[in-house]
Image (cartoon, rainbow, N blue to C red):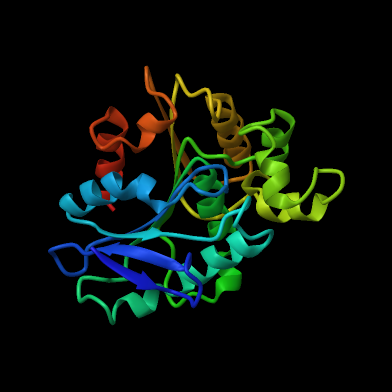
Length: 246
């Protein structure tokens, strides 16, 4: 593992897990934690290691979060943009890094960040294309998440207000409000998830398909919110299969 800065600030770093084979798919991971301090990229270290062992190069991204000692809107989105546009420079750090196949994968609130980055990709002026977006129990509708009070108060803290007081932020940051994303999408969700209910993914999938997006959706019986990032669980087998088959 190589920890590499993509910016000048302490949180603007990512961990690169190089594949043993050149030209392997590049997987960018965005952790959850409802955008809040102190939750960090260490949540996804086991998943990153498992993906590396499966032959994939993995970039586990850290970013600024809200809350005590954190940074307010729009610091988190600014960091995600910077980390994704930094990808070509990773090729100078390790020879295995290739940009022919690039996935953005986000867990929970990281799913919002991954799918938002997919929606914004055209503005990033990337010298490569995105192969697909993967959400693991993702938060994809910020207005609904606010009204359901997921991660109590998390959405209003992240965006700096309610859907009524900062409506342009909700419209810009919520993947559900940005459809169609025009990038293939995969969404995996556990039926026992009480942090982000699977009904949110079901509603998003229906809306995305109606908008013309290509979306694959799979639910996992008996799996809870954190089970989606457990490399010992059934969802990992599905994730490894879709990434390795790209």
